[in-house]
Amino acid sequence: AICSTTIFDNTPGDEPTVPDHNYEDGFCTVCGEADSEGEFFVDGWYLISTPTRLLAYAKIVNEGDTKACAKLTEDIDMDGYSEDFQPIGTSVYPFSGTFDGQGHVISNLNIDTNGAECAGLFGYVAAPCTFKDFIMDATCTIKGGANSGMIGMSVPGAYGDIYFTNLGFEGDVIGTGYNCGAIIGCNMKEAAV
Image 1 (cartoon, one colour):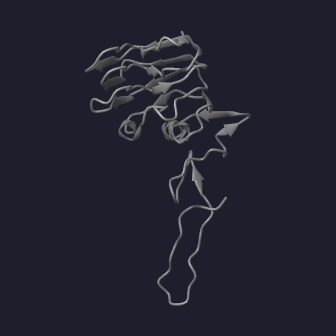
Image 2 (tube, one colour):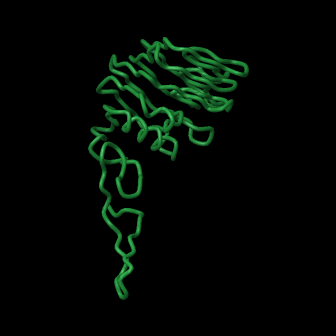
Image 3 (cartoon, rainbow, N blue to C red):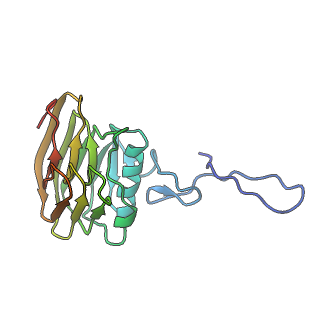
C-alpha cells in the first residue's frame, strides 16, 4: 500500500516520491498510520502482543472500525506508553466488538483524561459488545470525570447486551464526577449488562 506521506527532494527537476508503508509493530514508520490489515490482523482478530499494538488497536477503533475484535496474546506492560494511550471507543465511534484478554494482564496503564468523562481502557461502548478474560493489575490507574472505569460508559440508545466475563480491575479509579466504578462507570438503561 502507498503511504500518505510525500517526500520531496531539493534537487531541481526531481519529482516527489510517495513511499510504500513500512509497518512495524502496528504503525507505519513513515506516516504513523495504524496497520489495519497487516501482520497483527489474523482471521478477523487483531492480535495484541505489545504496547504499541494496543495503541494501534485503539486508533483503529477510534477512527471508525468500531466492531474491530481483538485478543491479547501476551501480558501487556504499558510502562512508558500511557501518555500516548487514548481510551478505546469515542462518543462518535463507540466500541461494539469483542475484546478477549485470553487470561492476560495489562499493567502500568495510567489513564488521565484531565477531567474529561469516560476515562478507561474503553471510553464509550455500544451494545452489543463483549469483554472477557483479562485483568488490569494494581499498577493501573484511571483518572477522569464522570462515567469512568475500566469501561467508561455505554452510549444512550444502543440496545442490546454487554457481556462481561472474568474481568478484574485491581488499581484505583479516581473520578471527579458521578458514575465511576472499577469495571464500568455507567451503563445507560438501554443496554443489558
